[in-house]
Image 1 (spheres, helix red, strand yellow):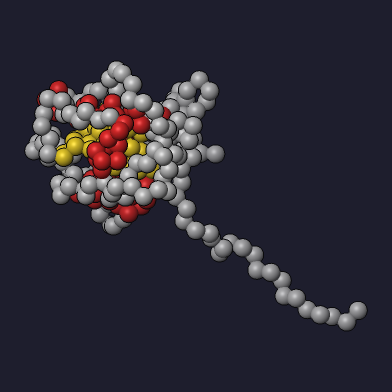
Image 2 (spheres, rainbow, N blue to C red):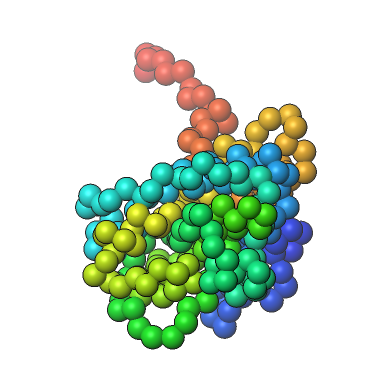
Length: 241
């Protein structure tokens, strides 16, 4: 088996007390990839990824839901990133006015857990924002295990960072349209779409490393079945005894 530590994002001691890979490290790998990409590839990757978003339905994902607001016509080429509450104060959406503000959720796709808003402040997992023209600020919340799904109460509290006083009763009308609900499979598909062309260069290597790292968490793209290596069956003949 290949040494996982050769992967750009895999770290020594990167497991929790019961042996699971640490969730925050997956978010960090995604955010660092966004940061390292060339402007052109970052633009293509994020536009494709956010275009795959669905409304977050905490009752049943199969029920009809208000569609998310169209992805704003902004450029992600020069997008900046931050982890958790380390977004610089001058870019913090509580202190700066952004034209477009969304909550991005990335998960396994498991049905979200319905919980009350609760009290206290939430800590986002990451940020993707425009540091120059203040055209957009996207708060990122990620999960990777089915037994730790997206929680509605946490999303409602995240709204405070964006200046949105969300309550559970406002979900369909106010909250759901401002969500970009994604899965790690969406991330893998967006990588495959953006990781093409002879000019990919270093971007291709970074994408390959991220896709491999996401695979360590159990997510892989299905590329069909390969029958080319199957042995041809012998020719059958009827012979006289």
